[in-house]
Length: 399
Image (tube, rainbow, N blue to C red; front, side, top):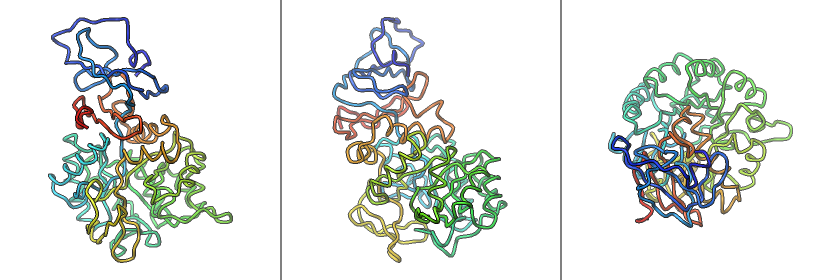
């Protein structure tokens, strides 16, 4: 949205019977691609953001609040007690709504390692929800990952990234596959990266035991994302810098970060922002069923997970098993604990992931013509409202 669209304008347009209903959100601090506008306004016309409003459009006073773009999560396994890998359509939609209530207006469903036939079938099932507009795409995390860095994935189901098998999963998704996480150092890894790049699917390096040099080769082949940087990969070393150094230094790579206070030390988060820059960071949840639901026992694919005090770990092996994070919590922590500028957080949680998905023309910023997807935060950065496609999912008046 141009700055003029976030402030009162002198041009008045009469109400037209052909024009959808308009609402003006006024008085808030509005974060635009060009910066923050104090006492700004956002005009919502039907399902989209507009540059101006009719003279008689109702005004919603949001003084003392922030208005930011709706959040975009490119790596999410479930929430609200529902799994995207195994739940029914009703379950998946419940999980989507759970995250939507926490500000995520655009969500990619992530699967976990499973039998190839099951994953192909699941891809076809999730593809229908993408085509309905409930999901923004599918992310396959596994089975093409390293047993040395398997995390919460079943080792007996892991396999090398054979390009033919990678192609089967892409085809099964009927054009809705957005990303595949690979340990690119495994046999077939580089060829699979090239295959994904040729088909317009993001090749993400993750759950990897690659060296610095092997990671560089994968990036040159077309890999553009680091799956949850720092986690499930060798640590940064002064003689063997490993994948972290290669992923941080290359301008072609966007790095995912899980900002829940468990997966990353604040210093690691700061290192990523300083090294990659705010334009190359994407906040993700890597959420599993327990997100927005609570402690207890859960299934993550074939593995049992126990969630205690909000931290998910495998019952056998004690590895961290995804997160219970929602993006509103990640946003608040980034500003209030990590002291990252609000504009940089908005880039990491909205604009950058939208650009990765190729949907920045519709979502990821508050600009005329884009979907009216937005989040209202109070002065303490606690979520108070969520709008998606012009309708309140969480009404600020009701909290």
